[in-house]
Length: 271
Image 1 (cartoon, rainbow, N blue to C red):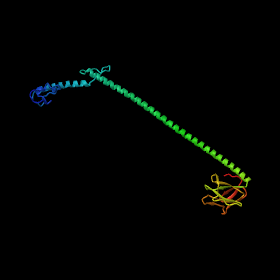
Image 2 (image 1 turned 60 degrees about the horizontal axis):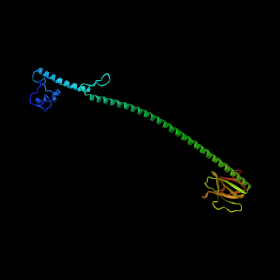
Image 3 (image 1 turned 180 degrees about the horizontal axis):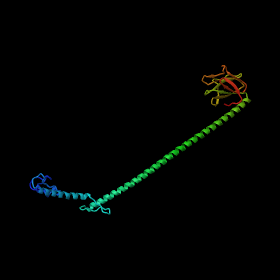
Image 4 (image 1 turned 30 degrees about the vertical axis):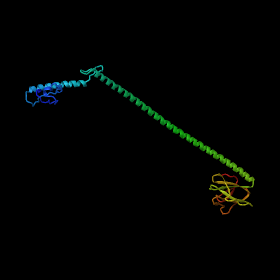
């Protein structure tokens, strides 16, 4: 069944002739030229050739599986396989141990990473709580500062009012004791002037004497004499006279309130 005679090229390696091919690589792998069922010849010879080819392939398969099959002893150590050098087995053991060590180090790294993330989350929560507490403290301090400032401003205003009333009262007392007239003028002007003349005197130079502002909406001035004729202006050409269009006039010392074109005497000055 095996045709090794002849000088034709081998159908497997396509290099050597069939005479030299039997000792080559193709025959070592079981690549033998055999007759097929359709070839002429004795069927018994064909079956024998198939057996030869099968034995060759079976030997080759055992050699291949020997490199892949690693059986382990009861102790857990790989048992040297037939045909495998001890150096190769040592390399296998070293590689396996390196893989185990690498996996162990990865597990430790994952545990450390999880612990670090937990600590970071805890620190972030503490920072948020501290920021909220600081904001609350700042708001409380600002509220207290505003309340203290308001109280201080109210106290200063009260002191100024007391001082003003005391000054006004003393001036009114002085006006009553002397021949003076105190005019309190209620107006919305920013500045107010009184243009006046006393009995037997001359009119003041325009726009007149600037009145003092002791409280918002009220102007005040003290004039010498007991008989006074006067009018008010804002220094910009706007004038204020009595409701009948005549000049204001007073007879007698004291304190007078002038408002909306009317004049009335008051005992003491307060808003």
